[in-house]
Length: 152
Image (tube, rainbow, N blue to C red):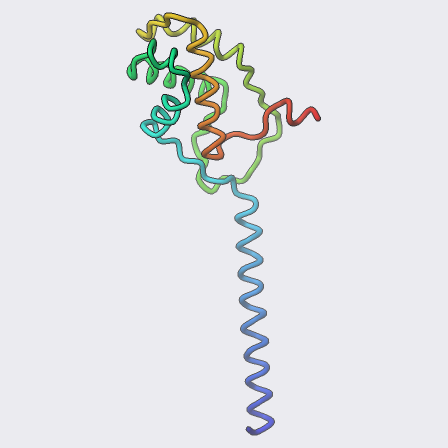
């Protein structure tokens, strides 16, 4: 092979590698700055939560009542700024820590359950539903670490 041709092949290979490395690096940096996509599917969430409820709670809550509690939970999250509108390809700009205390959320759901037509026979059912719903959010990657994890 001619030395000039060999030099052009080597230069072409180096240029191709440099362009590819630059493009991959730029895209990796852009994707790192963008919030991960967590998709909330109401049917999947209801099924996930129902499967994780203790048998006694499953016996007391109908699927419609569980759905009502999950909707109240989502409404509470929206009211507290935990469900931003434009999250697709949005830069991660969360500055303040937001802590959703279980007891505050349970109290809110208990208060709103009657107005939403959800008959709660035992308050512990709401607690179990909240914990299972939070586990769903964690499973889809929609929440950060718990406050107890951040304290240590």
